[in-house]
Length: 638
Image (cartoon, rainbow, N blue to C red; front, side):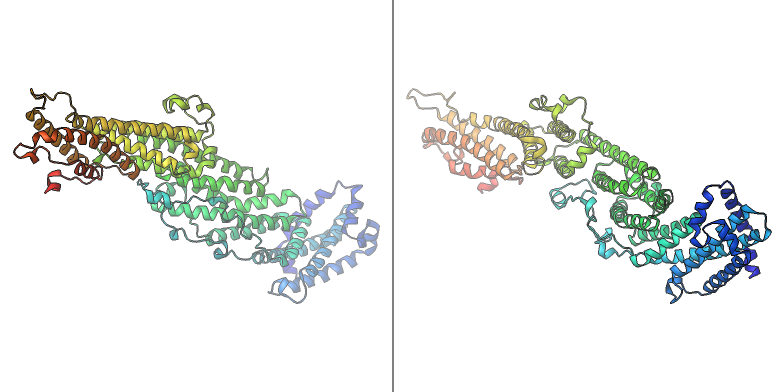
């Protein structure tokens, strides 16, 4: 026993000096302190009457009991006797006797009192070491394991690849995308993973250690155990640790999987793991001052939160590529939504560093979103083509842009928050004339979406100049503007662009359709006009003139047919309307011309060379236009 006593003498003597310094100025409070120690030692006179011998005998008996229990390798709560409460009762008696001895040391210079005080402190330290071990053991067992299956977690590799990981943005990829409020997916999971049967013993040990001025050891033990538990939580969530540099070097596929894992890990970590640790910390240290409780919780969660935030920061700092905007928005949504929980969990004073970092990451994500939108606009503006788009159909840039902004509309609320106050200053450059009066009342998102379409229209106008045929220029513009209108009308974009924009752009593509008709068919119809047909003395038209007219018409129609069967009008309704409009004008004029003048060629040899087509045949041929499949009238007739 003497060897055991000598082991911690220096450390205990230090605690005695501290205790003496703390009590040497006590006067009126001395009686109150004695009362707190216990009724048996409620004042100094009674303590002195007990006698030094009685105190020494009690201390030695208590030391034996503590040493005997220390020799048992089973945790306290696994032994039949004694239980934690009984062990604490014995240790409490040592602590009370030590308090009495400190008071006796202040009242006289008896060396025996100092020896017994030192002995009490050493015994108390041995008991505290045992309590600390038990505290650690109980903390290790007090929480149920996190089970990913119960949290509806799954590996990000099981997800389909991000529909927006490339630049196609075709119809299928956009329709397949379903933006959900991912930030709230884990909101309803059960977060009570605490084994409440052990809490009373854990709390009793924590309170007693802090009461005996062992709060530093108590907090250190608590933080170590629970920090390991939090680290294990991240491991269960299959989240790999990366620094910012590693994330920035990732290829897109790897980054996509990392972001998906991050979103899952962040949600479950905050709403399950962090909530559990907050609840446990409140249970264990609830009776103690916040200056003990709050730093423990912050120390436990700090490094893991910062590690998770580093991934979000890396996403914010990554190159601003348009196809990555959606993952950036998802990241912003998850973090901004979870920030509410973290503000609730983290104390204002001790957790301010973490919360400040969260707000900084959100700010960087905002900057990334707005910067990526500007990059997106620049890419549209700078998209240069050197050859005309085949058939005058809907350009892939138009599909990309319209499907991209359609996907953006699913993030309307988030984008509204991110883009607040970020309208461009030169609004007149992107707004329609009818919009300028109300542009100041439009949301930032509406302004940005309309500016994107205006930039696209300007780019398409430049691309249309690559066609040498003026008619095909009009077909190209008609097709692309019509596609834009359809995308807006048939999606949530209508809520942002409004009916006024739709009407203005319907008028726009209809004008392009009329321009096409004039450019393509005016020359064809000119051969069917009465003007210029010379009459003979019998007032019959000259057969030579009629031959030239029919030959000219045939040749002009065949040229249009041969060319425009290869042209494309993808919108079925628009294609039918265009065919009907052309047919109405052409067939009616041809029927009248043929009925008036065909009879004058009845006597001509090879009459079929001049009147090659009947009105019904022409009407049938017009149905071949704009199908995107080149045909020849000569081969059709054969």
